[in-house]
Length: 470
Ligand code: ADP
Ligand code: GLC
Image (cartoon, rainbow, N blue to C red):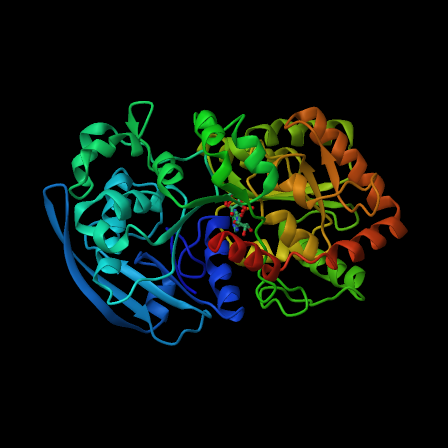
């Protein structure tokens, strides 16, 4: 099948979180399974763009409302990612360093989608599957079906929307409806949710099938999805949960180029100790204590707001029994609080505020535990990476965390689970982590157990195949 993935992120061209990892891996494994999968995304001004060779594939023009814009689609020439990567260049809109966070994100991503669909409409043949990811690309199914310029050719193509995160929906007021190329106004209900144009809701209504990145998250969406609960109830029949995989080529402790000491199941204890030593030297913390790390966006979904208080409670109640390192960026208030704590707990605690891909690998490799108290976690890749590197996940029982981590108290378990995103639960799970660390036989057993879990993409690819042809 020819599958075209449309996304705002794709690693290594641009990544803000797990969406980038997924779109950077799924098409590669789909191709290995015999498909012809490709990715189209915005041409941001990132390092990957300057370090690689591209050729022009298409030049076009379109309107965003009454603003005429020209766009160019370039293609990476070597296929080094394992799939064809196409970038859409729109001067003045997409030519930025970052993926998100600009005041005109609505205009940027609407123009991106219009450019992509104009390009698809120009093809001599039709792809089998148009696969959209999150709200930035979720207007495409509507445009395929209800925009006069595209529906003749594209209305019958299978469209899929995968929801990686339903917290963000791309809401825009109805006065921006003229951005969308001339559409059948009888179909306004297919754009609307609660008197706004809601791109994610529109994607759910118009796509052939909708998937989310774990089963438990799909169940949670009917109860808690930032206003879309009823919609998920109505559309439940066409929604499916498919757990993400992880890219074993990139996340492999025996070959990872970001880490100094490689290891495998047999050498895990020694390998982790050596990597931990480097972390402890760099962050000036005690290497003899269990090391707990948090890696992620410092936002409410990840319960990052309760980290500062939790850290204080841990060091008050479990004095000198563990060390903590944070790698993250996000809410400036949380960033400042986490930085300020560095002075209070020297030798036990440190934080790197910012985004650092290589440091994340080093931490997965050298840490003993990974803390994820997420309030919302559609899938979560961190815990899967951690497990692959023999690092015990301490996770709240929610979404994909629930589907991928079995508590050590249960049969064949390997992780630490708790129910609430609360300081008390984090404290209790830390006590359990310290107990695990002090039982060296148990620690070794669960490290080996986790490292052998198969979270590879092959299974996921087969699950998508079933949806595509369902
Ligand atoms: P989300 O996409 O919601 O942020 P995921 O667990 O799916 O959560 O994926 C997060 C990805 O982003 C992982 O690859 C993780 O290692 C990475 N990541 C998050 N924050 C940082 C950071 N500050 N530096 C480096 N990598 C980070
Ligand atoms: C989102 C989710 C995260 C998931 C990722 C990839 O960003 O927050 O849980 O792992 O997408 O699907």
